[in-house]
Image (cartoon, rainbow, N blue to C red; front, side, top):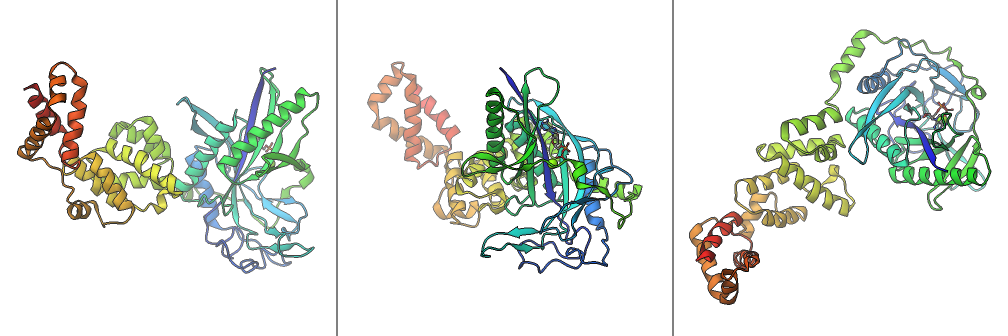
Length: 480
Ligand code: ADP
Ligand code: MG
């Protein structure tokens, strides 16, 4: 039997506001437990929530960026449930009329084609606190610092057909919210998390299969692994005559398995109703226009511009625009190298720099080589001061902080390229004189030996001879 996989994601992006969504308490991460929760976050009686306009603006920005319909007005609802980290006994969220309605987003598939993924909705809600199970013998601690932190929950249509597609979509959203500067994207700190809904159905069947929801997976790698293992589990279960039950499951990364956590609640279990403490949110046209004007160039527009204006390949342009920081770095390198060779800049960043960063476990934000340094280095290749090979040596030296810029390293180590044709000729004459055997073979028709002679000359010049000149002069001399 052939199976088809159906996946929908619910992504929680913590909005980068200074204060909470309904109170003035700060949202900074990592403070002492319970030092950043005020009376509103603690759910004390007699207090009223006041909506933080910054959270609204950020949600609107997101909606505009995915071409979504905005609900105007949108309304807040109470989602009722009991848990120690939720002192009010309800979470303020949105059900009907979420601030962001239907929108869409294109992802790139592995074969280079695009697929449009529907976004069902994105709604505003408050985060809960955290239960802390360590360090309290036989007891559980509750930290309410996170209570009331604004979240944007972004719900996708069940349009994703594999774990790879789910990760590509998640990365797209992750990059977008950072481009928009509405979320810091920090997955370790939980600022960006994802629940995956997974089901399978026989190929060709119209109705969706029963889904399981895998909660709170905190890395791209684990999303992929969790979904794949869940797909395997469901197929095996059905093929053995069993049935998938709708439930919430937990992913255990150590054992690489999903485990049942609880049966799935239905919306009516939560007794949602409009929050009487909060007015409907009316978006003034001026606010929407202000947000539209504040949108940065979005990833796909940037990618297409890199392709059109700089003749970069679609692949290179996609890599360079995968994060706003990387795109900014690329543009800064280009500028620092006098905008001469966009392709060269792209190659060096993608191959050399990203390769080295990856190996060192660093990302572009903490690159040991600044865009100015790299641009300055590339400029010296373009103006023929150094060869590409020497440039790689200087790259290493810059990485190891052996100089402030390429020029000072070239100067200090005497790496300037030899372009004096007299000097190159002298080296070539010497190499030819020292290798009479190879010369005879070459002249006898063994033309592959040309590379040998180039190698000898480059060696004699310690890599500093201008390769184009070496080629030209060598060819003439060998011909006799
Ligand atoms: P809830 O809010 O109860 O989790 P929703 O109906 O809002 O449920 O759906 C949540 C997510 O589950 C959405 O991303 C949706 O695309 C996805 N989804 C719904 N049905 C299925 C299914 N049968 N298989 C896979 N994903 C599904
Ligand atoms: Mg859900």
